[in-house]
Amino acid sequence: MELSIDTASELASVALSREGSLVRDIAWRCKRNHTVELLPRIEQLLNEAGIRKANLTAVFVSIGPGMYTGLRVGVSVAQGLSRALVIPAVGVGRLELDAYPQRALDGPIVAVHRAGRGELAWASYQDGPWRELSPPRLSSPEELTGVVREGALVVGEIDERLSDLLQGRKVTLRGPALEGRARSLARIGFARLSSGELAEPALLRPVYLRPPAIGRQQ
Image (cartoon, rainbow, N blue to C red; front, side, top):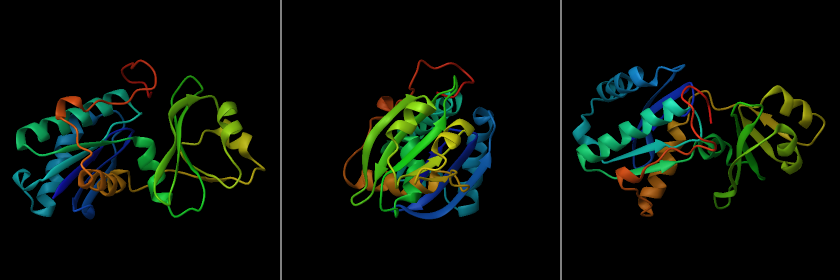
């Protein structure tokens, strides 16, 4: 049984899966209370599923980019569980998790989130097989508009400026999945676990696209 933890944004989620297949999950609006809310939600999830921590065989965690405090808490909890239970850990990027539910699209998927200072964090992906086309980076809405190809899907935290710039283009806009990212994390995490892409707990690190500032999205 695997535990997935996503605390990269105010929409947090945790999930239990068996070989990557969802068993149960919880998503909630955490605002900036990840420090006090994450562990009780994990306990709730385990209790509802009738699972003890000792039954866990792996832990998957979203490593960002995203909210500094949320990522720090999620990664720290994943590290602690991995060490205490002597189970493998796998980190997966937040933007990939936003893009993954749209993988059936025949074309590039550009995942974005608001990063402050008028910038957007973004990366692009495509299925067949699933792969990263462009790694996570920061750009202005104008810069991002210049690289979004016609026929692409743009998904995530799309700000008003980017929406206006893409108006009239043959581009589909879609908000983030309301059920949270832990479901996608369970699928991707198990696939990487199966292929041997593990991390020593101490080597799990949040991804920040600029030097972190507490309380600010990166």
